[in-house]
Every structure is written in C-alpha cells, then in structure tokens.
Length: 395
Image (spheres, rainbow, N blue to C red):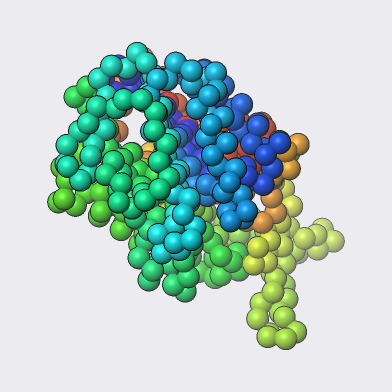
C-alpha cells in the first residue's frame, strides 16, 4: 500500500493506493493487519479528505471471493479511524460476468465532518454537486454519472486476452480548488524470461501505450482540464536486462531448455570462481537472487536508476522523491513483513503521480516541506504482495 499526503486550501488530503488482491485469500491475518495499518495511518496523519484507490478488488479468485468485498468495505466505514468522516463515496467494480468491462478497481473517498465546502463532479450534467451522506455504488458503474470508468481497448491487452486493467476518474472541488483523482491498473510482466530479452522490455511498451491512453482521455476536450493525481498499480518494473547485467556482471550464464519444445525454461547465472555459486536463477515466474538485501538497503535506492518507465512522460507526469523500498512482490506469509517472494524482480509498481499543475498545489514554504510524505504503509508487517503507498498532502 502506498500513500501520500497533501494540502489544498488548508485541508489535509491523504492519497492511498493499494493492490488488495491478496487480502481476500486470508481474511483472518492479512486483511485484519491491512485494516489496522490503514486505520493507524489515517489517525497519524489526521487528514480531512482520504482517497483510497484499490486494485484487484475481490482478489485473484474473484468469483469465489467477491462476496467478501462488502464486509471489507463495511469494516472500513465503521472503523474508529473514520468515525468523524461523515460523508463517503465508494465505487466498486465487481461485475466479473462482464469481461469486456470488468476492471476490479475500487475507489473509496472519505470526507471529515469539519470539511464544509466539498463538491463532486457530475460527468453527465457537467456540473459539481454537494456531497451529502454515505453511498456505496457497485452496480452499473459504466453508466454512473459521478465517475468515468474505462477498460483499455481489447487490442491493448497482450494477445488481446481480457484481464482486469483500466482506470476510473472522479473529480472533486475543495472550496475553489478542483482536481481529478484517477485510479489505474496497468499490465503486468507475464514472463521474467521475456522481460529479460531486451531493454526496454516488450511489457514496458505495452504499459506506456496504456498510460498514454489514460493521459489522453483525462486531458481531452470533453471537460475542463484540471490538475490530476493518478495513483494505482502501474506495474512499472525495473529494466530487467540491465538490472540482471548489473547484479550478475561477473557471472556466466547457463541456459536450460525444455526437452519437448526446446524453448528456454530457465537461466542460471553463476559466479566464475567461488565454486561457481549460483547468483540468480530466472524462470517464467521465478526470480531468485542470492542477496535480497540489495533491494532493501538504503530503501533500494541503488536500483532506482533502472526504474525508467516514467521517463517518456517526464514532461507530463511528476512524482515526489522515492525513499521507500520496492513495493512488490512481498511475501504473502503473514509472519514475513519484509521478505520478497522469489517470483519477480522487486520493483516500484505502486505509485502516486501528478500533473505539473497538481504538483503546484503542493508547493509549500521551505520549512513546511517535511509535511508532504510519500511512503509505504506497514513497512514491517505483511500487507499482502504489494505494500500500500501513501502521499500525505497537508499543511
């Protein structure tokens, strides 16, 4: 889970993104821990407006687990941390029977009773409306007036196979400060072996195209252009070829092929001397490096040079400095809060990005700079396979 905090018009705003896919597999441990850490974060930052963007609502086995989503939302809404938040808007895309529309995105917005002047945009009527009471909406999202939801066109999907990827936009006005909040889930890397083949990988190109699609949609001529925050699971990965060349610069590589198809099954990188110790083993869904500490030391900042997928958007999308370790793929074992799974190269998948005009809303006098935070929630406990990101925007 990733979060950030900002302030507009003197109101503390907490932006949180969380891929919650793991939570519905382990309600007893993971979900309880997640809810506790989220609530503690809200209490610590004391925002007046909380925006929580979730991906993979209902989990990986969504047909079986979607029934647990309502109780998860109920627990959130009734939590002590949110008891003074008198208004709420929750939008859940749960309709998995409609594959051409299903994104499994969830957007939860909580508004403190002391925040008087807040409005939400009606995209059908093209005007702002006062926010009153609490509403949970999970039916007919494509035709809902208070949000825009789109799944990517089918030809954007690898091999044109539908998966739960797309975006949801809502628009808000705090006093006279208006902005868009966009929840996003981009395509993952299907195979470590394919990701390794070239730099940049074929998958980063697919993500770039999909993010470009979202940027075009939220800045087109249909509505007034406003500052925007895009936060979700971008699935950004480190440049695999270059990371591996850096981590295994002195190693020799052994290729193991399938007896049946002669396709590459695994790559094994060994030290040239030192008993030819294995440094890295790479398979389609297996990434095992000898020393995981390299991803945690100094919050993995040595590897940030390989985090390049945003560079094509550097004029249009901005981000606060990253000072937290890669947010994915953490162990889903509830006793292993800091351990990465040996499935993927650890990467900063979960991010909070903003337009230049949105960044300008955050600029504070120098002595207040520290009040804007960008960090992982629950750095030491198991929050599922993704850490939650937060940005705290406050003054």
